[in-house]
Image (cartoon, rainbow, N blue to C red):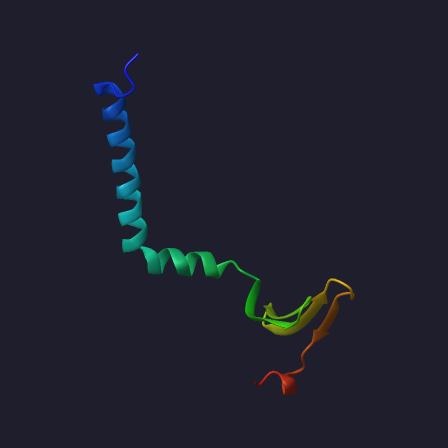
Length: 89
């Protein structure tokens, strides 16, 4: 049994061609696709930072409100809703 028959090479070439066409379509329509994906999001991660060897702070925007979530391995999860006065950074 031959590993590379003309039929197999044709199938591989067609598959790679389809992938290249899909890549070109995604790159051309990047802005439109990105705005459609973001339009339906209710939760967005604004910022995330490590605050210790086993803890992380994440600033989220949920339906327009900002929420700070601090989590760690040895501690629980702390959730703090930021008021309008704390909204400016």
